[in-house]
Image (cartoon, rainbow, N blue to C red; front, side, top):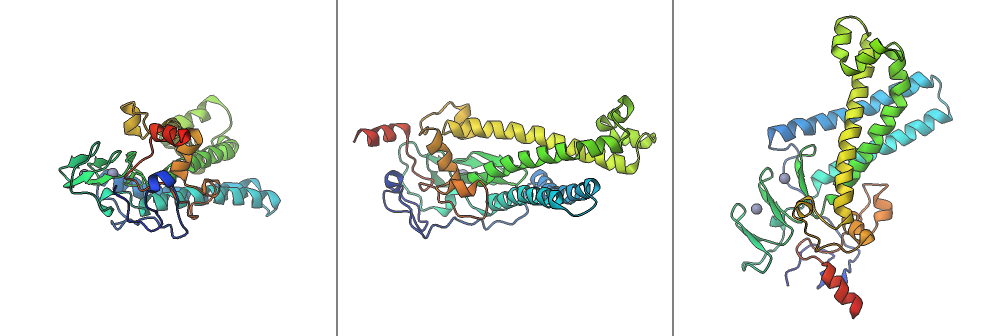
Length: 304
Ligand SMILES: [Zn+2]
Ligand SMILES: [Zn+2]
């Protein structure tokens, strides 16, 4: 049996699932900026766009409520909560290391393991080599271009919640600023509405003011973000519900389906009820990323 060297995992942890107080997650030592050009561009865009949209929505808030009052406070608090959750989860998604190289892996190839010629190591079940990160990732789900890193065993929670909060944030912001946006581009008529489809042409022909142009652009960005994050969230919920990674979903591997609640706890950790609201709280994940409880193991445990 090969066990992770992380503090906190007890012997035979895959079955007992006991975790002590010293639980720590492995940290990524790579540069914060991704190596790949596309990833780097998207990562910079995300780190600029999210705070910029937060500032913009605060500005819109004061268009609705010129004076400080309870409504402003509640809106500001809720908006800040969504932004902090998106940025906090993105930060930890990059910061936490899910690569296989951090583990003490066996020199002998075991059943269901595979040898990775790129990393020159025996890769455990559910691990796959990422051609962009150029390393094997434990329980690899996918490569996230917006964060410029892979989503794997230790950082899946942060990816999932970043998507949840990005979807909620963009949806709330799009709905919140919609009346102001429509008013700024000239009301709910055919010509002003075209500004939402092609704001640069409307600006060029003088159909819309520069301020209306900015409103239309932010509305388009927010609506695009709603569509993209909703799609990503649906994919994630479908995969996690079945205890699958995206690769396992494509290959129809259902071996690791432990039931709806256990599947989500596997991703969100044992303190999931706090983790879903706050990215900075530690929420220990069961297991070591090398060995995994299967549907059949669960049946055996139940029958004992
Ligand atoms: Zn590899
Ligand atoms: Zn990757």
